[in-house]
Amino acid sequence: MQLIDTHVHINFDTFSPDLAAVRSRWQQAGVVHLVHSCVEPAEFSSIQAIAHQFPEVSFAVGLHPLDADKWQSDTGEKIQSLASSDSKVVAIGEMGLDFYKADNYEQQRLVFEAQLAIACELNLPVIIHCRDAAVAVREILQKWQGHTGDKIRGVMHCWGGTPEETQWFIDLGFYISFSGTVTFKNAKAIQASAMMVKSDRLLIETDCPFLAPVPKRGEKRNEPAYVRYVAEQIAALRQETIEAISAQTTQNACELFGLVL
Image (cartoon, rainbow, N blue to C red):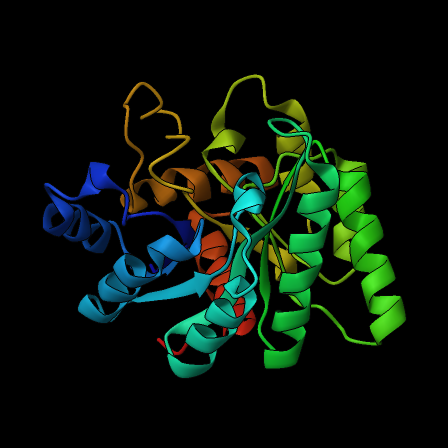
């Protein structure tokens, strides 16, 4: 059985003391590939170093919406330059909108659209962070596709929306990725969404070191090996085997990110 964790942050300091052991555990758990996301350009060198240290790690470059105020005149150029020059870059992001923790709405929109433009120019998928902003994200993606004629490919990561919102992004051709939140007892809307996503649009992730899944929820640090618990929960919700969920989500990740295992 092979699993792909499509969203990790293993460059964070919490992993520095024992990253080799963390890797050993993800290998033992059957995790054959990881997509390392990016919060801001200051991380580029550390993420790139990890991706080149571990053959099974690919990465994305971008600016998180909660760091939108860090966008400088040369940020877009930095993102585009690294994405163009390193074959291990498989996506732009994470990008998007977060209206839960910040209210600089216009700045977030500008940065989001600037990164969509880069992704379209380079023909790379996008990794979208969307929190309390589904209506606005949908509007931007619809307008962007309508005005430019470009078909934006990507994933709604760590998805927490309702089934109705989930359908919006499926209709736009996006993949939907579920994290440890789908294992939480009271996450009824997320679980309902996990049951209705089409098989060919389903992805799994940890978003580690955040959001450790049940039965590891009490731990302070999530890690890639725990993506198996996400797969197990989705299998149970959809009344499928974990082998089927593993095979389908691995195939989907390979198709979206152009991965060759």
